[in-house]
Image (cartoon, rainbow, N blue to C red):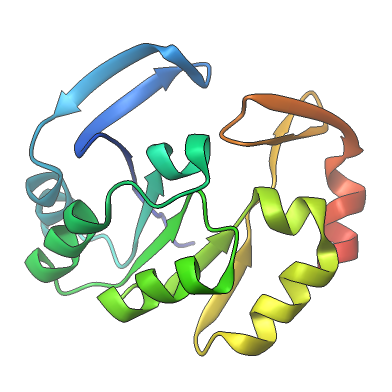
Length: 156
């Protein structure tokens, strides 16, 4: 089993949203690269990073912070949050991100997800957030009527 610790970034700091709500934020650390280093020291083989600014706005919001994290550790990272076109995905790949997590846009358009898998050298992962079995998109802000299991099968 591979345990993948996660770092949620909002405005360059490590946070936790209460039940995905952007109006209930707890800051855990102002130094995300130190959190990443501690995960690596504890044996993590991969770190999952969520760009919450990106998830909310559809634009990468923490590129410099993610670059600092990548430069401070020796294990790969995967990033999701607001990656809704090829150029945004490539901005992360060019930083050294190993895996790209496509959520909202891939859920809205399985064809887009397939296209991204073909275009990007490296790993592309479908990020399907679900609440009560229904797909949640745009940083958990919108819950759709789409069945999460059916979507997962379609994106395989």
